[in-house]
Structure formats: structure tokens, C-alpha cells
Image (cartoon, rainbow, N blue to C red; front, top):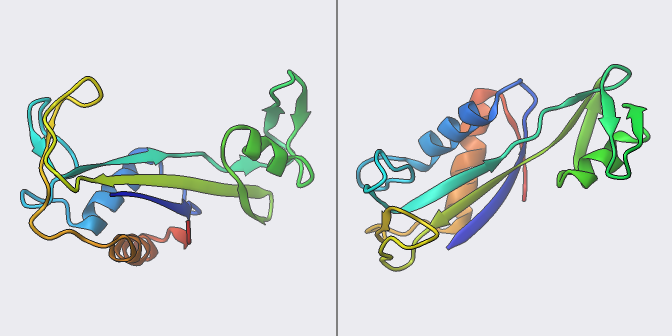
Length: 151
């Protein structure tokens, strides 16, 4: 099962802090392991965070794919976020916040290591639903002061 969820980080948390919060929210433990402790570890899934920092309007210089550089404004920051694979969520004062993507893979069947992954994937005893995963993430992120959006 693959789940994609989106959040908007408004408290300055970085990708590592966000990943730790997601693992905590989903109940990462020996019975539901989403992060390998070694390259030969058995896991039940994986979490990937595609993080993007907020942009400061009037201060940050944006470099567009066509090579053009512009000072960040409310008019151009949404286009720039889109070019780098994100979307503008909101502007608060001089800060433009975008979405951070959370991609979760939980294995439906056991998988041996192969060219795309070094660890063994084992189906968890109790498979969470996509909605349970999203709900747990949103609830925990709220406790951490991170705004969530449905993805």
C-alpha cells in the first residue's frame, strides 16, 4: 500500500524532525518498523519526506527553470514552488509556505531485498488503513504545531 499525504510546515521544522514526527505518529516500533536500523534489517514499510522550506517574500531570490532570477513576491512564488514540485499553501506576513509531501509505503506482501531496496519487507500483522495513517499523522502534527492539509 502506498499513501501520499501533504502537510504545510509553519513552525520551522526540518525534514529530519518531520520524518521523526511521522514515524512517532504511525507507531514505529519493533512490531511496525518503518525505518531500518541496519541495511539487513526487516521492515514493514518506509517513509519518504519531500520537504520544501518556506520562502521569504522580498528577501529570497528565486531561480526559475528558464534561468531567470526574480525577487520572491506573492505574484511569482506560487509558480516557483510549482516548478520545484510543490504548491503554495498560504502566505502569512512575508512568509510563503508550501506543501511538504509524505510518502508512506506499507508492504502488503513479504518482499526479499532486491535492486531497489536492501532490507526485507514483511507485512505487518495488522494493516493500517490509509485513513488511519493520515489521521494519526494529522493528530500528531497538530501536537507538534505543524499545520496539515489533506493530500
